[in-house]
Image 1 (cartoon, rainbow, N blue to C red):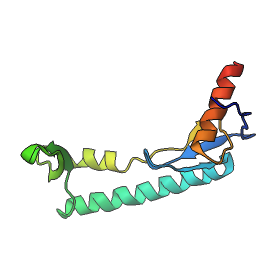
Image 2: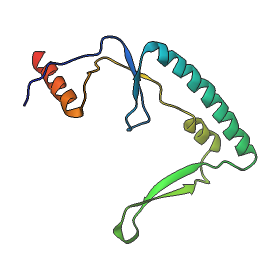
Image 3: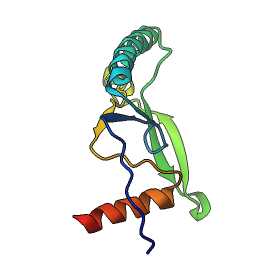
Image 4: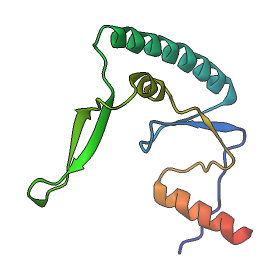
Length: 123
């Protein structure tokens, strides 16, 4: 295992991501603005979906795994047994920025992992 000195970011950072996809790290100043925008956006989206539900233009969605000929295939369907307002409520939830305690400054995943190993060895 190669030794490398851990380089850490100096200051608070918050992770803003789209699930398992890579996202961005932001300062507290940007995070506060981002949360405000998210709130305004999600309120408008919820209103749009509820209006669409009243006009039969929005449906509760569900998915399942299907195995035709042994091959795993996802399928989507309208769940007629579900509460549409409950689905809308869950659909308009957005991940909030998450404060990170340790952030490495690195040019690659391998280098960041080596820094993390180095930090563990020091502890």
